[in-house]
Each structure stands twice: as structure tokens, then as C-alpha cells.
Length: 118
Length: 114
Image (cartoon, rainbow over all chains, first blue to last red; front, side, top):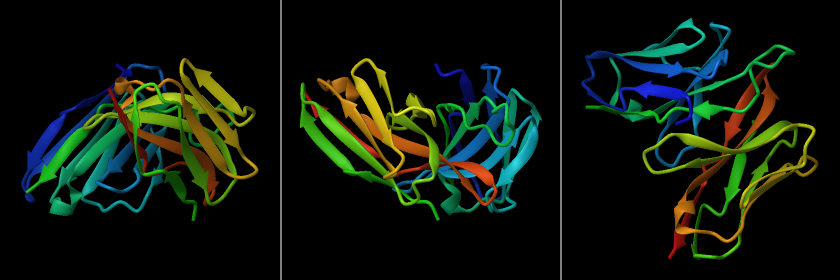
């Protein structure tokens, strides 16, 4: 138990569906991240939120839409996805550095949401 | 662009053996380094974090070191056990394009045979 909870753990959706992934952290952190993990590729950073403000959008297609309503919750809204978007989506959190900028402290990950797009 | 290389990509050893996993960065300007473990279909579990002012960290049978001048890190696992079987990923924090990013390697898949 890392203190970061992701739901659902598995999701199968069609290309025309709209779904959302949810992440919740109970660690008192104020930075949250979405990563994509595809087979045989390094983890790809998608979005970063620091103090509920998006500070990083790593050229992610608009069919992925993040939302961070507060420092404990992070969502990834999905619609009109493509089969190549099938992957493990990992949420992480960390404590923001006092000096500002994106948090660079230790990252804690959730178990991931395995997404399959048909 | 920063790239992280982990060698070997896969490793299979008998139980009890000591082993070393390697991680290197094309740009040595990293300021902390984190090692993770990932079991199949699961998320990442943080093992060790080496802060910018440190050279190594130890936790139980694990020891990680960081040589910033060469952009290399090693993870040493002593007396390996079958339960150590997993994929081990290293990730370095660096500045890129005015922001800070955690850049991951592809991982080393470790199998410890009983």
C-alpha cells in the first residue's frame, strides 16, 4: 500500500466511449502526475499538477484531458481513444520542493489502471 | 535529449547470488536518482532515493550509488531471493526546457531462480 489509489484497475472501452480514470493520494503531497507505460517503452510523463495547477503537458493528444480538483485527487478523462492508447496508466504523487517548481522529491505510484481500447 | 540506459535488459541468477544493475544517463546533469521495483501488472514501488547531496543509499540488502560526474548509478542486491524477481527501473530528476522532469529507463527484468 503506497498511499496512492487508482480506480478502476482495469478498463476496456470502445473508440467512441467516454470514461475517466481516478487517482487519490493520502500522503499529504501537493504534486500529482499521470504516466503512460506501454510495452517495451520507458514510462512517459503525460501531465503534472503542482498545487492543483497544471505545470506540464507533455504533448499529449487532446483526447486525454486531466483534471485536478484538489491536491488529493487527479482524474484523466478519456474520449475517442485509439487502440494504440492501450497501456498501463500510472498515477504518482510527491511533495513539492520548498524552492518551487515541480516536485522532485520521492515519487509514490499507484497500482495503475490497465486500459484496453478496442 | 536525456536518455536513460539500463543494462542488462534482463538478468537471470540463482538464489543467493549478489548482483549489480546499472543505469546511465546521456546527460550527467541530474540531481537526484530514484530506483523502483515493478511487479508484473502492478505499479512502481520506490526502493531508494539518492538526493543531490548524497552518493549512496542503503536499505536492507539493497545499496544504490550515484556518480554524478559520469552520470551512472548502480543498484546492488545482496544475497538475492526469488522474491526479488521483478523489473527494476531507475529514474533521474533533471532540468529540461526550464522545467524539472523525472526520466525513466526501460528497466532490468530480474529473475532469481530457487
